[in-house]
Every structure is written in C-alpha cells, then in structure tokens.
Length: 234
Image (cartoon, rainbow, N blue to C red; front, side):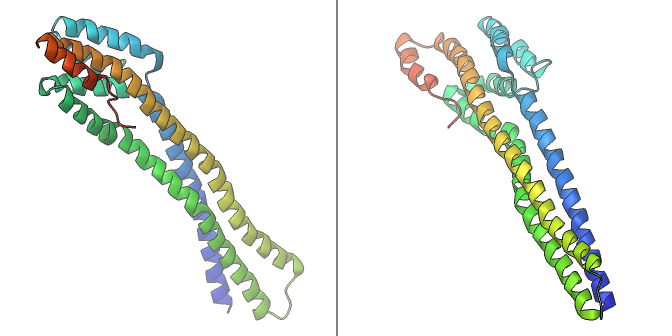
C-alpha cells in the first residue's frame, strides 16, 4: 500500500510540474502573439508607404515599388507583404490579384497567428482538467494513507487535502488569465484584418487607375465597381 501511495504522490507532483509548464507555454505564446500583431500592423505609416509606392507605380517603376514593400522599415507589416504580392502578380488582372491576396493573407499572415491562438485556447481548456486530475490523484493518495495506517495526524491529512485543492486552483489560475488574453488577441486579429482591408483598398485603387490607362473608357468604367469591393472577405 505504501508503494502505491508513493506512486500516486509522484503522479500528483508530475501533474503540478505539467501545470507549471503549461502556464509557461501559454505565456510564451501570448507574448509572441502580441509581438507579431504589433509588427504586422503598420498604423499611421501606411499613408507614407502607399504614397511612395504610388509615385513609383505611376512612373512604371514597379520593381522599385516592390523593393520598398520588401525592404525596411515596412517589410514585416501585413500591408507591405500584400502590396508586394499584388505588384508581383499585377499582370494577371485585378480579379486574379484579389484571389491571390486573399490566399496570401490567410496562409502567410494570419495562419501562424491563428495557430498560436489555438494553442492558447487548448491551454485554457487543459488547465482546469489537468488541475482536476491532480486533485483526484492527491485525494486518492490522502484517503489511501487513511485506510492504510492505524492513526493519521490531522495536520498531515490537512496538508494532503490542501495540496489536492491547490491543483484545481492552479488549473483555474492558469486558464482564467489566458482566456482573457486569448479574447483580447482575437479582437486584435480582427482589428488587424479590418485595418489591413482599409489600407489595401487604397492601394488597389491605385492599381485600378494604372490598369485603366491601357483600356478604353467604357471598359475602365465597367471594371471600377469590381475593384471598389472589399479585397479581403469579411
């Protein structure tokens, strides 16, 4: 019986260690997500980037415009990344460019962020469950000592029960803050998508004007409503 109780105790301590690792992993992913979202957002500098690219595009210097998007200080932003893709594929037409931008945005910009956000969501669900498992294991060990000994000191039994309850408490302490953080990150991702949508629409209007110069007036007027629609689906 003593060996079984020792095994249960070691199992409980292993769960505590797993809870600690789970908390560290959740905080690590949250920090990386906040940093990545801050880097992807361009904010007030978007006007300067669009202006520089527009001036080069109007003179036919598309390679130089692409170089600006792929170089510092804008290269790490979502807007610059999508603008570089649009410039590279401009010869395929606006409709095809929009399809490519949607794929690029979801696979290269958002996918990695959503994967880390999914990791945080998994930790939020696992924390209380793992804590409950630690509580059950500790309680089994406590009652095993009661049944296997003639006399158990109340202080020892109280410590065992306290340790068991701390496991559940630790799981809740891990899950609650990370749930709040996860919701905040999810809101920031939506804001990044909406902000990039508005900024990218200004750039697409520039490509539309450039493309319309090589078309008859009626064809250019016909293509304008299509270009004015949202680039990234909501």
